[in-house]
Image 1 (cartoon, helix red, strand yellow):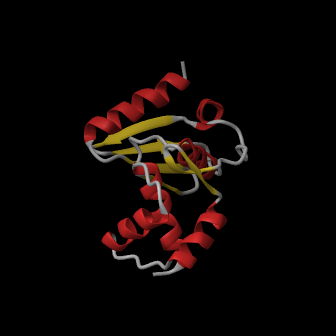
Image 2 (tube, rainbow, N blue to C red):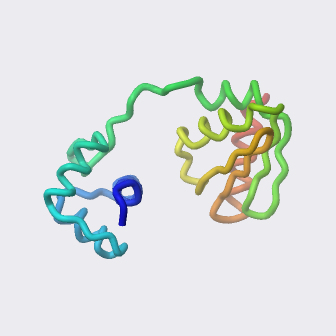
Length: 143
């Protein structure tokens, strides 16, 4: 496994449930098929900017690099089309990527991920119900 993948799995684990020790983190990574030594985990924790809190490891969030999701949605979103557990968001040409980045940075638990083209963002939700919930939240920004 490469470092980027390992970092992604570490972040997914600490966001999903409390991980309080490096040993616990190593054990959870092994369950995912990602081997890591204590030295490697120490380096990963430092590189990812994780801090140990009473609730377990947490990532220290840097200041947002751009406008918040509400601002981006209100400026760029033109249309939302649901398709089962997917949402297809339409923007003007060139605006899909900033919208996708803002959605990703919002880290909504109902969103698995996004894919952006030039004027279209595909939003993936775990199921149809949560896709509808995301659609309603996005539409509230347009009111």
